[in-house]
Length: 272
Image (cartoon, rainbow, N blue to C red; front, side, top):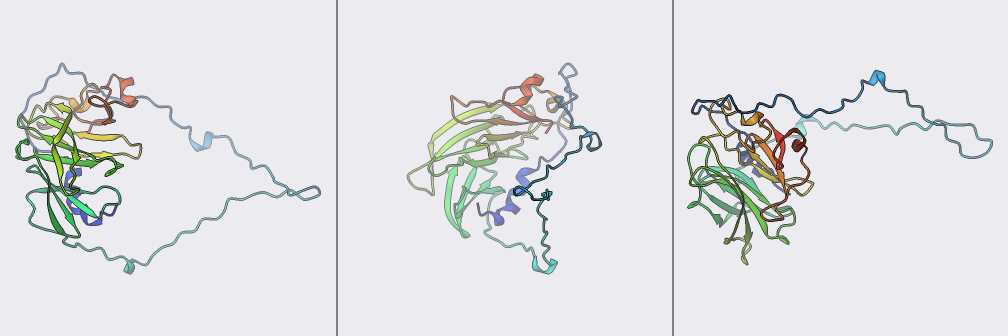
């Protein structure tokens, strides 16, 4: 994936910005104080010594010890690396993320107001998808995430994360149309809807991992200091990274270890 120019656009979407919200806490909610227990590795001093057996090349040959191959490190002079900012395109409306399918020479720019713009070598090819009539916009709400299926375009599906008109987080699937520069809005399929108790801390980043599963980042639901304790509640989808497969009705869930700690089946990581 060739995305070096996208990093400046992508970085804001990866950071959950803490800001003040409405106070109020529910002390009756469960609080999860410790992560699932794991067996720690013993310190190096307690590990048994490992002896390499001698190797021989034939009868009458003295034993020889096989040593590991030496490692080499190449250090480039600092003068050979000169990072610089280069304008790829401008004139976007609240851009917050940029990505592209693997091996694609285009760049897809997510605008918070609900539109996805598509570029090729800095030239605008138009609006790939317009969800502006579906999203609630303002502050930390809006169209917040985009991820293409790992086999795109052979598998024409892609996924978006946005806050709908009620403020709830929506994870939805779309497909590209017969025109590779345009998605088909009629193919919308809602995978997941999560209510948000406040207007802020919605999260929004989504990405496919090397395991082929879709990872979904949800903020703690807002307010100042996680007043509802969702980041410490293993049963809450908020304050979590979810891991799921978009194949299914509406999706399927791989084994996620937080289930063993009383967590929701979709939760892969907590406290975020």
